[in-house]
Length: 298
Image 1 (cartoon, rainbow, N blue to C red):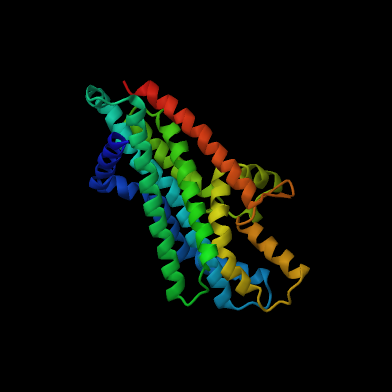
Image 2: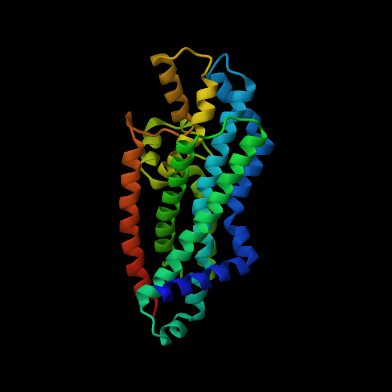
């Protein structure tokens, strides 16, 4: 295990020493934040307020902002895990694997050193972004998360980091050149915004397409982060309505419209179901990633 941690530290240092790798892995979240604040925040807040006649503008902005930072955090879990894998691609292209194998290292230890570094960087940066979102909420005098809601959001972030680290590790093993890696990072970084309902709302898509996207890990990880993050704002937005079935249904409809609640052909995906799907997918992808790395590292 000591060798694995040593290799992980080396990969972490290589990532932080390259400002362009760090910046490129943050391009997606930064673009989304800029687009949202400059162009979309007012429109989205007005749209959310219109769905709940009688709600205040401040409450609509609070729910809108919680959705924004939950979505940005989800995108960060994906983009940062891609960014640190540049060290793997560079080592492959330069033939550095042969130098490592001169030492008393097994291939699985070398592969695990990359995986540990990927998960660590992805989680650290994503949690930092999520924490900035909570600071924004506090400064805007918006409703804060409870300990339970915050804990569930953090678990969702960690699960996102796990599944996307495994997914991107598998995909990067098929990129034999730096150009192929850069192309993959650009294409998937953009696609992630659509697949996770960050650039487009489920309410604007057909039911069949929403059902298909809801079965993919991109939308599920976003929902696991959005659901607890948006609960305080959603509760306050509907606070003027009397408690009852009508209020609960209106709240559910709104959460489904923004991708915080997922349905597949009219059947709700519960938190437990999504967690089991993502954990199972992480295990399968992890096995494939280990096998692929073992074939590449020579």
